[in-house]
Length: 356
Image (tube, rainbow, N blue to C red):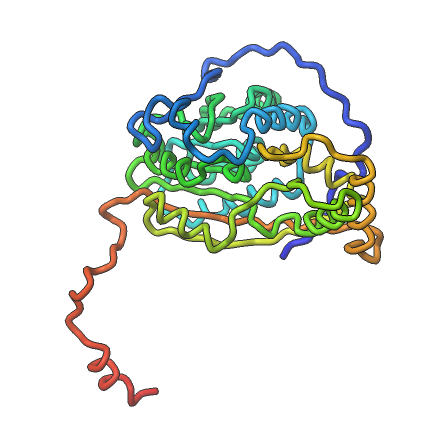
């Protein structure tokens, strides 16, 4: 478990930075539409097929949240987001092979690009997000840094309908983004199909224990003030589901591990501001669009009374699930066919049992 002192408790009023006119570089591509991978999970005709699936999140609202987050986080670094991105990118140092072409999906795009620092041997990087403002913010940040070590292109697209050709990239990275998709298994299948053979998929998503303190405070406040509960926080995947998701998507050599981060804030309002700056506020389709003022104040009061620490701050837990998977390749080890063993456990026990 890691503890992080949030900077958001010391941030005052955040002004919207006026948009500066910028010129597109020769290696920048901005698209305004997204579509499904040809031949991938979901096929063509994305709109018609998507209407038959269960929808939990309002993707249009989530895009608006991302637009707002692009402005709130402009020219700022987030300790928690950077820690997750750094931990995810550390896995590239364990790989002996290089990944010339990479795709970065949604979430903390800026942190991933800034913290790569040559890891993975990436030569061409495509950064994709549903939000045009977020993409523009990432592009402006690169222009300001004058870092041209990696040829970078930018794409506005949707993770649910991945606009990437099959077998076209060596590496896909998603840091804190995929947990907002309505069809997470389908998105992961599309990611696998977009990878070349022996390509690597790295993802970090928020787990079910995230913001457990806020969930408790919200529930108690709603029951006290409104006589019932209303969904204010989105459902998140459990740790036991992550391995099944990788297997269902068809990844080989799947790996899952979990980390918990405890971020401290001066108040519950600072926590909400931090969630807004990350683009992590409520986007449920079945949400109550009106939050009663008395309920909000009661939530903050209950949060502080139940979870405040001795130094006067309040903690918030973020559970992060890291997932690793490879697209199948002949070089990967495979389990032997059932019944193909030539030595029985009885013989092994006779041979080595006396040595224990």
